[in-house]
Image 1 (spheres, rainbow, N blue to C red):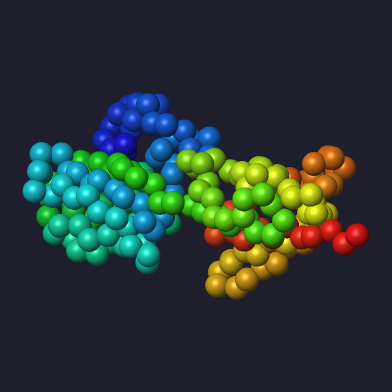
Image 2 (image 1 turned 120 degrees about the vertical axis):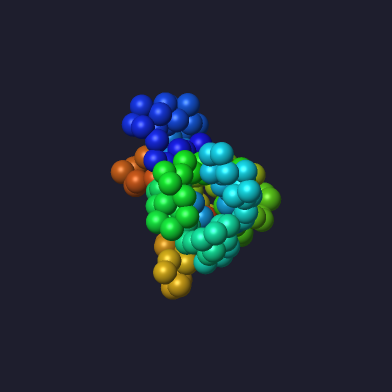
Length: 193
């Protein structure tokens, strides 16, 4: 819950009672994304209360203002943007509250030589490592080669391919842990006898 336009003490208390997200900050630091369901309210303006899902282009339609791009902003920044737009032409010192009612599903796919290949939801807003992703898929089959893992990631509209060695990661031979992102496709290769 974020109150934009309130006194600093009120903002601080709203941050203190918010649940932490994966960045270690409060819900005010959560970056809104497509398919998040948000509830927007304005203090003493019941007609402006709106519960809406953020569209793929990051916009929501808010009464009086129309379409507003809030995707990619923190909850706090989005509430402040709406407050500023309402204060510009419509209300005197509006108090905007933005609450994330439902987070969008963040998924990744694990294929190849794992016990249960398929799509998996990322837990809440926590980061998932490569080894955790393989564990979620039931672990390796007996013919899997943990040294031959391919990860495909779409970044800025282009596919990137990463060749990874989970055997080194598991043995902590100096290989750094690899973090899975939403939309990643992990393929565990087969060992050749």
